[in-house]
Length: 431
Ligand code: SPV
Ligand code: MG
Image (cartoon, rainbow, N blue to C red):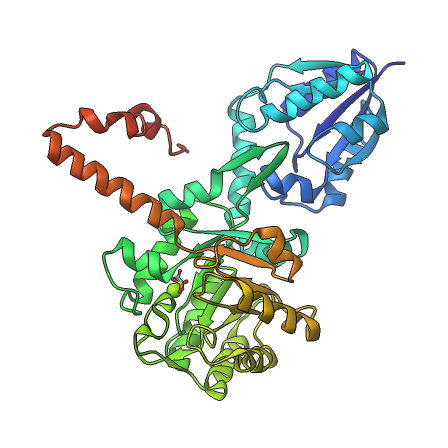
C-alpha cells in the first residue's frame, strides 16, 4: 500500500477537505498531519479550537489511517518522518507566501523520491461561509480579548503594529511575508495615542476624547480579528479610568497600557524638552488597583508604563516603580526610552527579569530601533510594539504626491507610485 500525506490547518472539515481525503484514497492510505498552533499562527489565522480538538476532527474520519503532528511550516522534517509516496494538497498555494511551501514540498519530495498531487481547490458559497464564520468567531469579543494572553505564551515575542483606521487595520491583519523559508505576520495591533491623534490632525495631549478613540477601535475591529492593545495615555482620573476599563473589556480589547504621568501629558519622545510630570507611585498604584478591581474577565490586561527613563529619573526609580505597579496588580510592565542606544532598556529588562521571571515586559523601539526582536526576546521582552511606523511612512508619501500634482498640474507623473485603481477597488473584502 502506498502512503499519502496531507497537512491540514483547519478547525472545521468542509467539502474541500473531504474532496482531498477522497482523492488521497485513490493513491493509497492517508496519513494526516495537523500543523501545530505555533506554526499555524505564523502565516495563517489563529485556531478557534484547541489543538487536541483539531487532531480529533481527523482521528475518526473514514479514509484517514493515522494522524501526526507537523511542527514546522516547511515539510523537510515531516517528510523525513512519514516517508510518504505522495503529498496531496489543494492547488491554491501557487501564489503569495504559500508558494514557498509548495516549492519546499516539491524539492523535498524530489530528494526523497515522492510525488506531489494537487487537487483543484473547492471554492463555493458553502466553503466561503465556513471560512467567514471562523473569521467572524475570531473577531468576537470573547475570542479576541483573551488572545493576547494566549500569544504571550505561544510566541517568543508578540509583534505588534500601530493601527489607527480600518485601512491600517487591514494591513496589520493581512500582511504576511516569507523570507528564506521563514514566515511572519503581526500578532497584535496597537492603537497609538500619537497616531490616532495625528490622523485627526490633533496633538498627542489626551485631547482626542475617549468616545473618539473608541470609535477608532471600532473601525479597526470591524475589519480585523487580531488582538488590540490600547494606548490609554495616563488613564485619566481614576474615577473615569474604571469606566474605560469596563468599556474596553466589553468591546474585546485585550489590554490597556497606561503611563505614570499626570497633568498635561505630552508625547514621551519629547522627553525632558517639555514640562511633564510623573505621577507618584502611590497614586498610580491606586489607579491600577482600581482598574483591576472593576474588570469582569480574567482575560483583560492592565499594563503599567514607566516613564522614569524618559524623564531621567534613573534606573532605580524605574525598577522600584515596576515592583510597585506589579504588586498593585499590573499584568505587565512597559518600559520606555528615547535613547538611540538600547542599553538602558536592556539593563532594565535584565535587572527586572533577574527578580521577576513572569510579569510580561513590553517595549516600543522607536528610538532604539537597531535592536532586533530576537535580541529583545533574549532579554526577557514579551511584546514589541512598532508604535508609529505606518503613519510615518504614509505621511511623506502622501505629501510628495500632493506636491507633484501641484508641480505638474496633472496626476500622470505620480501614477506609477500609486496603487492601481483595480487593486484599491478589490482591497476590501465584500461580505
Ligand atoms: C504612542 O504611540 O502614542 C505612544 C508611544 O505612546 S510613544 O509615542 O513613543 O510615546
Ligand atoms: Mg501614546
